[in-house]
Amino acid sequence: MFVKSNALELLQERRKELGLSGAEVSRRMGLKTTQHYWNIENGKNRLTLEYAFLAADALNVPITFFCQKVKEKI
Image 1 (cartoon, rainbow, N blue to C red):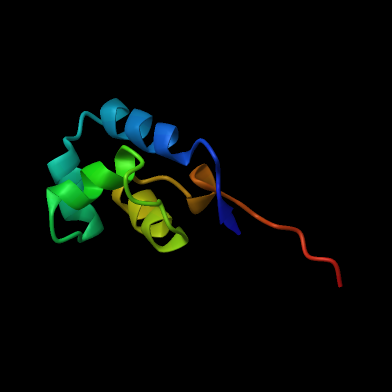
Image 2: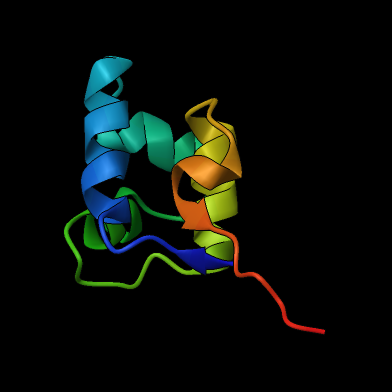
């Protein structure tokens, strides 16, 4: 599984769609500062898989909203 290339755009659009502030999403994700969330949303920090899971939960969307599954060859 990996984070989609447009995940930051999706993150910001979903936050605005729900009418949430960055501070509220930060709180829901359990981040220590609002600045950390702002840095993620604005591409200063990477949206890691861990943060994608937290954001999906905070914004009430499935993880596939931010991530794509990788098919494995066996």
